[in-house]
Amino acid sequence: MLKSADATHSISNAMPPARKRSKLKSKTSHSSTSRSKAKGFRISIVGAGRMGTALGIALRRAEHHIEVVVTKSAPSARRAAKLIGGGAAGWVARQPNHAPEVTLSRLVQSDLLLISTPDDALEAVAGHLGDTIRSAGVDRGKDQRVAIHTSGAVSSEVLAPLRALGFSVGSLHPLVSIADAAAAHNPFSGAHFCVEGDRAAARIARSLVKDLGGRPFTISAEAKPLYHAAATVSSGHVTALFDVAIGMLQECGITTRRARQILAPLLQSTAANLAAQSPAQALTGPFARGDVATVGKHLAAMKSKKMAEAADLYAALGLRALRLTESTKRSSRPAKDIKKLLSR
Image 1 (tube, rainbow, N blue to C red):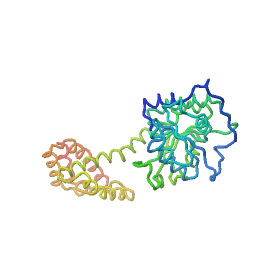
Image 2: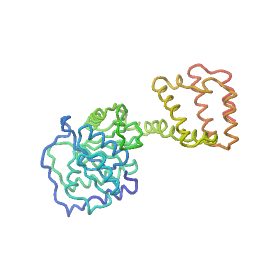
Image 3: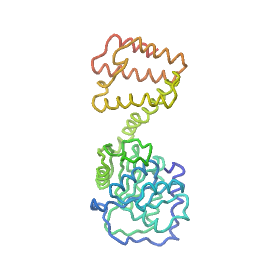
């Protein structure tokens, strides 16, 4: 995927100078807002890292047409285009002299631009895409094009340069962790997607989510940073905590690989409980039971191994767990004693 500073330079350089390029005229009228399911949208993806590539694969399986994938290097462009298939063209953003006019034409004539670059690059990428499309002079008649980015923290307002060209702009953020873009299964099936933006873009984004087997929901643009922070805590921070737990088992003489195998089913069972119950009801372990002596032993063990970071995390989250017991009226004298241990 295009990285922040690199993306600004890469996309800018990827656009051939307007004076050397003929005007690209659309040969056919293809309405992006009234397409039939059988025909699908013509989509170009800018920033085909794990998320962009996974979306490209899933959208093609859902009968959409992936025209161009733009990445920052030849290997990633080739890989993304190959994985997506269906005749998708790879465009290496850092090689402006190797951008065939037919590829540029496919990009600027796409019904939908799906921008999946890092958040910090979005503003620059939107500006450079706007310059490219403006200089290409594509005439699509009354057809309205759509530009959607996949950031969870940034609103669709960052795509204002494209809106100025008549695009309806929006954002579509899948609440799913993509570890392998080439996974055989559809990682978006059953996932929830946060959608916001202009009316037409939001409508089309919801349509795409349903095509992917996902479930759309909408929040205001102003709420996106807090929404994304919640997603980070429930995914990225849980992963970090899992790594801390692996470190604890390593101190017990267990290998990293074996520690993952041991802890993963426990994490999966906890996730299943949380899907069916409230956090307070799903809470188990010494904080739910009020086991003062056990918590004391935990803290002593971490201290003996000089695991200060783990102990700090344990204490902070333990206090939160005690608040959950209070919400279910399970608070007791043991809970107060545990709180004293954690506050030392």
